[in-house]
Length: 308
Ligand code: NAP
Figure 1 (cartoon, protein in one colour):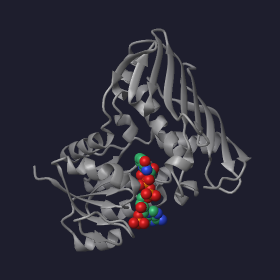
Figure 2: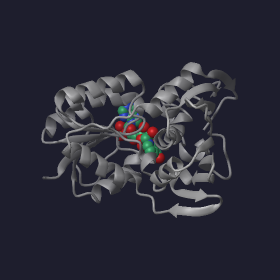
Figure 3: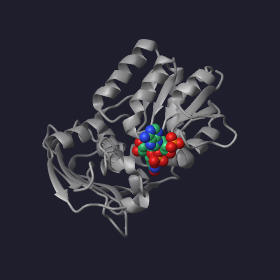
Figure 4: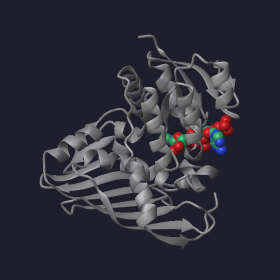
């Protein structure tokens, strides 16, 4: 099968850090154009908007949409209507209903829509899932605490409505637990902390249960300085499992069981190629549904203003 002619829309941090090297190392994709208001990729023709790109380069087969979530639906709609397969950066949209509409359009046109959840492809995630399936799970504690000033300096969109705030990293934890835990989760209680001068939360404390009453507690906080935490700790009948560093390492009872080099984005592009070949879509809305539920059910508390 000839390689897929790919375009990227929204050339920013994640494109430079991850998409470009992953695409360059994958023979199934050939990057032939970009659309971005300011960002460009050396040696690749660039256009200011997705409309200009679709008109100028009709041979594009697929697009990766890497702009902030508030602007993704419009671009995805244009791409699907033009007959292109679509890779959506996480989160797949600003609302559930717009992503559901994209699923409907992709299905009706026989195109592949990929809601990518990069953390699900972290090296130790599948090992963690297998371990949890082999024992009885008693409780889960998710600790996702990082310094927003370090990881998202001056990113205005992330603090605006639809930018998700602390759920921008927190949704990565949700994408992992919804994949590795054996049963569906439901939020039972949540508190979201909003800086007085921002639309999106800086911290969230969330309790979930499943049908068996499993206790799952998630703490997301962007005010962490010093040691950063992206850990999932499960107490089980076979001991304590710690999936740490965002899914990179797995320890059981303090013993490191699994640690391999990170290759989340290469794996995402392998999956995108696979679903294009199979003429399928891959859109799991569970992580975004939990974020929406936290906004629905959670108590909203105002805290000190935040300045970059
Ligand atoms: P970013 O650098 O702030 O934004 C990406 C690009 O989107 C910008 O460079 C900008 O390019 C374009 N853009 C910004 N505002 C726009 C607007 N109002 N309308 C249209 N285009 C706009 O953000 P990022 O960190 O790459 O994140 C982008 C997406 O990837 C987010 O959904 C994020 O959650 C996800 N992601 C990020 C990371 C990470 O580590 N940064 C990791 C995984 C996933 P132009 O100005 O050239 O148009």
